[in-house]
Length: 300
Length: 165
Image 1 (cartoon, each protein chain N blue to C red):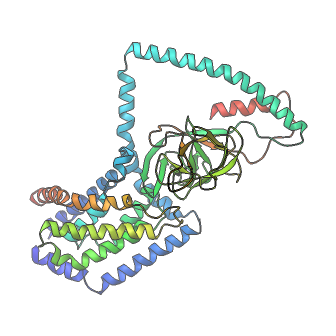
Image 2 (tube, rainbow over the protein chains, first blue to last red):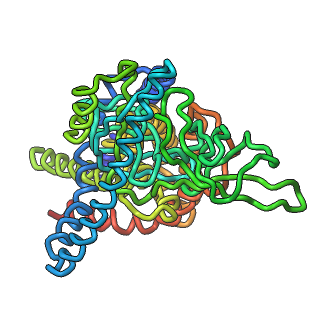
Image 3 (spheres, chains in turn red, yellow):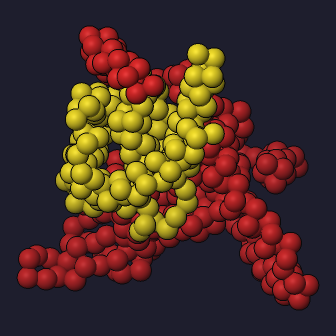
């Protein structure tokens, strides 16, 4: 047995090894070149189907755990939570009433100003399958893909703020690049005074860089940054981060950075925002269209 | 000969199962600060199998594994494939001599291979980074080298059990 292994391994070390090496290196480089051009490849879907069971296996225990904890929660806990949720729902509904009135007014005013305006982004709920946070890649793989209508470039938010955008899609999964990924930048503006700038990822989960903000800019620690809608990728108005200020030291003036408001490393549900690129008519019809948009949102 | 064939199938199954476990460990959800120290288990397993079963796990297997790792971790297709191909090749070249060396020396070699793999992945990254590579990026290679003796212990136990049955 031992001798047989020996001869086999000698055979592997022959010239066929070099041939295989060249073939594999060439194939890798070709795939890299194709992906660099930004083409969606069939091969990716093939391999995605191969690793799908692994992803499911990894996310299964967490789901089981959640299911069990929901199952074993006591009656009183459930009642208390129910009560809390009902109060929150009431509060939100109250706010929503005012919001709808404001939105209507806004649409009407914009109609008068001769501009178009989009109301109501459609959203799709997705759950993260794996979260990959190492210094040079901040990615989330979610459990919905092109079969569910997800496309590359769609914005992803959680309950608190912007999480990232869809980078690649496979039929049943999608890769979401986080706003903190070092290759990612998002156009933002300061909510308080509308000052526009760009927030770039650093690779650290809790920090965004603001390289284009001068030290004399009118911002304070704690100011909220929201998406400005410039660039057309992210819909305007989603909260992104809060300003943190590094005070002026011996080395130079004060520097600004920002801490994301979304819980990037612990979110359980994500919303993929479907921002429709065709605007609604200038002056909305009073009886039907807006309501139907809203119900469609609720269905999703 | 037929019994040998059955043993062959069993061994191949063992190898594949270990790779699947490696994939699970690669993306298992752990807190962010721990995740950046999580060693590249797939590369470690690849080094192990090219060392101990070079007739079954070669360059082509390494490439396939690398492609799966690319999809699994959301990399560009070909980054890990390139890295794994190279480390499998290098390991196959030194394979006859390495097994007899003491474990700490093996760990050192593993460290070199893992660093090379991470460098290749960084090199094939499409985008320009806003900051130069921070030191923490190389941490998984070091934890991987530390995990090597552990892997040897576990895998040798598993392998003997398969051979005995």
